[in-house]
Image (cartoon, rainbow over all chains, first blue to last red; front, side, top):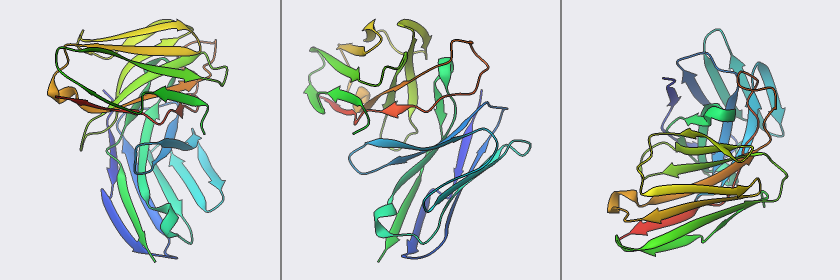
Length: 108
Length: 119
């Protein structure tokens, strides 16, 4: 059974700081997803990656398949980035296996 | 707006009631999912429908009954629920490969969820 572990569970930072959220998984996977969940529950898919690095605006996601590890970085963080960030592995017919999420608060 | 619509957004029901959650996707996807998010627990997969056929039932109690009449609609029928079933229920859809398992997963688009309270 694949297990997905995220760290930290909670993170509070000041506006402008560089943010890193880490994700480790226990078995080989075909894809790793980063999701963002805002208060109220809505979930948005940020990245899906199977190798290397992806960038979208101030967000960067990396994955190391050999080490079974992925990171999500936020540059020049802003209070609107405050949300729960969730790492998930798998997909397709097996659905996704989720981490517990990282609660991020960016203070002005 | 993700293209996946869930109704109702909030639902309060007694343990003897029967209700249904509805999910509709306007993205032309061929796979749909039900997930459950309980307080302080990770999201959990409940059901997967791929090309309208159920391909995954993640040990979900029979008081939850899914229905997928076509590739755009997904229902979750609820009956005789327990208070511990109170949670956020999320629907998602994706466009899956016809090449079968083992291919790279595809981005899933989520609905806003139905927040269910069982009294």
